[in-house]
Image (cartoon, rainbow, N blue to C red; front, side, top):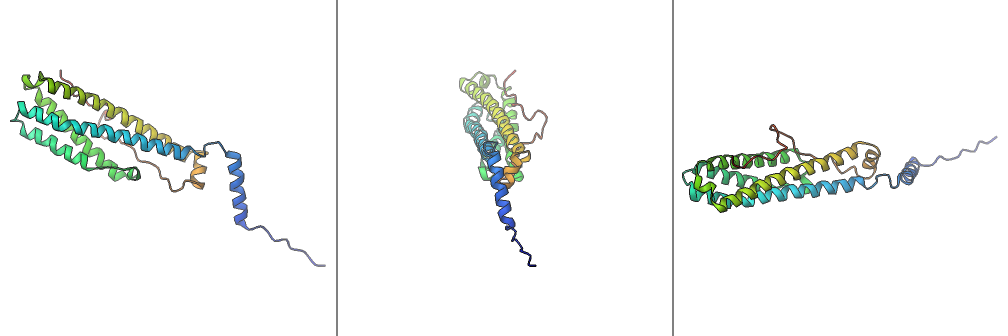
Length: 206
């Protein structure tokens, strides 16, 4: 008696069928979350860069104003100029957001500029005429506002990165990541390297 052998379907067909079934079952259950959250991360990073650039743009006028009243503070003025140059030389595009070394270099450069500006503000306390100069007061107010905007932009970026990273680590995002978005890595974020690093520096006068 002859036994008829039925050929089994190709395993690849089974895998494809399984993927299609899962896609049908999970349609509308977060399939677009990962790219959406990734775009939000990039957008939030753009705001961080915008605010840091806004601060950098204030520095030349601030330095020139202080120089007009306190030329003898050349060391402090030079430190601010050099810190600004270093901070603006390090740029991070969307493709570099997952590079921890670049993020660390960027953060260190911005912290150096923050420190230099804080020292410049402390020096200005010695010069009453400078403290009452309208141009200086305007620049000081703009700097304070920018530091606050930087703190908000950093917070929003950290939140966006946390949402994105959580999505690709948890179900069903983890499933979609393995099937459709495996080329999208975890994103780096800011790390608090100093106490209260998530708060805006205090640059106002007593």
